[in-house]
Length: 351
Image (cartoon, rainbow, N blue to C red; front, side, top):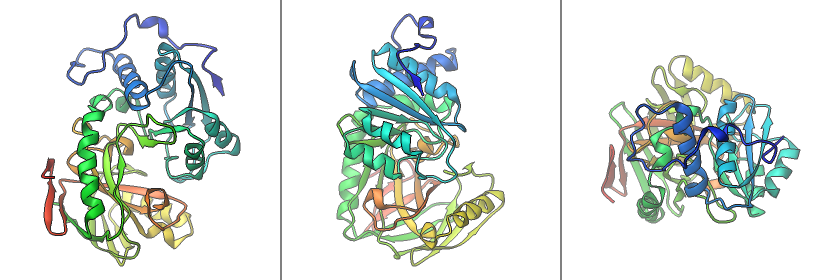
């Protein structure tokens, strides 16, 4: 554990507060400078940190340590007491951190989690939020993600867009989604509430992801059918080299075909030794207009003009499938219909 009071990493190099505005051109600025800009917006806008709060950064051995150092630097500039914990990388998305880390998370006002596999779907995250902690996932984040324009999106403005789509999800009975690559899926969402990731966790107990902005829903278990063609990225392999084709019947992924990426996904799911890991757990739509697919799921799944399907756990988003893992699959150019009405075509929302 590194205590924030011990050092303010390279803070002396920055003499003026970085303006957080997506309209400011970044050409010519160093990666370090734009990453600090992203970290400041992360803490000020997305986490709403205040001087004197206790902030914890949980990272892991497979994540670039420069990310945690840059967020620490932003915390020092904002006079926030900050600590860093680095754990061994978990083998599965959603796997629990060590017990001492779970305890530290419950004691923090704010938790920022740049890790190679997500902690969002862990019991540790749930327990921390129940204790009043604010949690921000940055699963699979890289320095280019931290320095991206997606980190400086107008999160408050997009929250209103998100709310409208969530209301549509909550009131709908069926989702039908297709894309030019060959995706054709139907989901029964009757009685399920929309679940939003706004990129903002400013009140006690809130949890989100950054720069992710998405509207999601947990489909009724056992009632998703069709074919998913993944032509974007996955939370396990990053950007796909060849499309992954997943055949789904009665909510279960029956076949996962493709090249090396598909093989990696099959091995990861089999390692859980549970059929629950193969069930559809989530459908989501990205709403961050400044994000782009770069192989980091925390940004990829939030890109406007994409949608994603997850296999595995959905307990944390209102479903009933408890699984050891949660794997997201991002695909491009979705055509989304709710009860037969088009609400999204590519990047164009009609709701």
